[in-house]
Length: 105
Image (cartoon, rainbow, N blue to C red; front, side, top):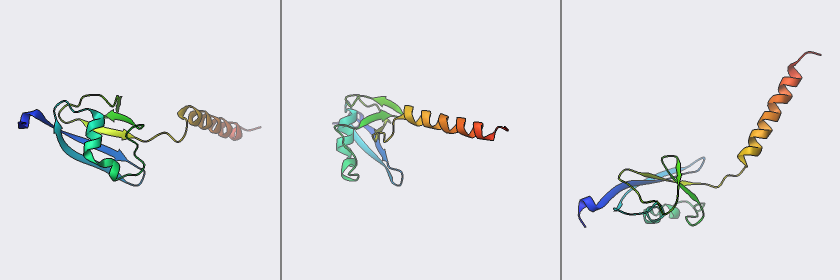
């Protein structure tokens, strides 16, 4: 396999207190999932589930079967712990309560 048959990519994962970005060379035509598996990043974080976690490339959600290009950064996303819609509703309710409490009688 010649050098031009290989591409350089990164695989990234982050927790609130620990992150990792691993650089690797993979054969051209490698998929997102295959690069994540080849990187060995799942061995460094017991919270990674490559079969079920979502993936992105530079912040854009992609399928595990997406073929990588030179320089791509594969991001492994953790599951959400709170429903974003519910979080927004709760925040709006708190703002309404503060505004109501700040108005004179």
